[in-house]
Image (cartoon, rainbow, N blue to C red; front, side, top):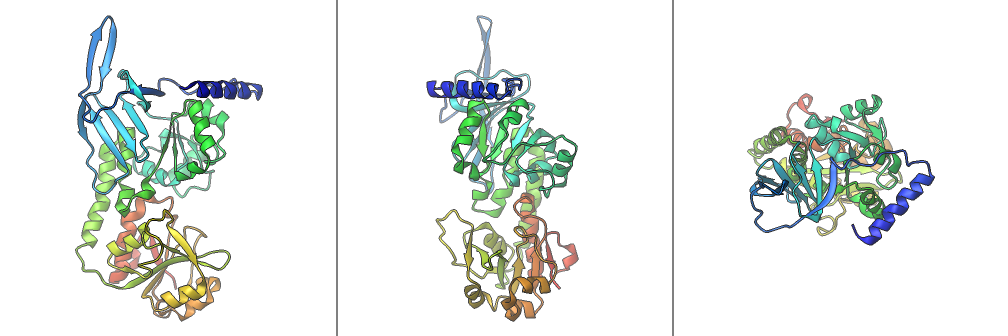
Length: 401
């Protein structure tokens, strides 16, 4: 730790002492430690030798996780069950098996996660669905969402039972609670980049932080493949691979049919009467393409932009999408609509749309931002919609009447 950080840490602790927070415990050094290791292009195999009554541990490389679509993380395995997890921005987590020694001489940017992993602070909402699929919600002690705001039933139950506590939003975390609960790791999304002081404060308290980059994956199933990152963190690689493989199988199945070339508009109406649509480079248009459809705004937006959506005037939307074959209303922002009449109350000009007149008006269910493991199934539903399959079999789409 640099001299500046030491001073900052001392000041923070003194300040919290004045606020009556000194009674709170600090994170356990057994569960998280920011230490250092020398990196090499070809990591060596893990070796344990005893010299002068001191055990020395060296990382000895064994293999790397095979990834099919994800490009923003990697997992390297070492002899003895050690794992090095690396995310897009270079953040590294070394997972140390329970009862094993921590390797010496690690780089400063390597965070040590001693198994069993517990007391996580989850702010990135899309990750909860992955933990739920891994049956690992119990490893999350602190939530960035309040009780009732989760669309994941197990998360709401944990909060109702007091097993998971609200610890504040990404920009206003409850530091007292986070420290007193011995938080081992904060899992954030890119919103934390707008509050760098929060990141610095958490690190000053010895709490490592990683950013979930699943939303930056180019392929829709690349987002889903991040379950393998968290599976490696928690020692649940087998379960993660099983869940991911289910969705790969869905994609392979729908890909056997020829593209329909039928057009789809995916949108929602904002509170000020604008139409929010997805940029062509976003994952939703790619899901439509994988399902065999054609996104109506195929050249919309800047492919180099990190933005996934943009707003347009109703007139522009009307001129571009009036003759679209299907419309799908995105319910993840405003809770959705239950009938065509409700949709027309939001935007009367939709009545002239070909899709409305033909009864091809659909709506998403649940919350797409939290249901990260729904992507493969939603592709399957869109494919079923285009193929005229039984809508009773669909999980995440329903037809508006």
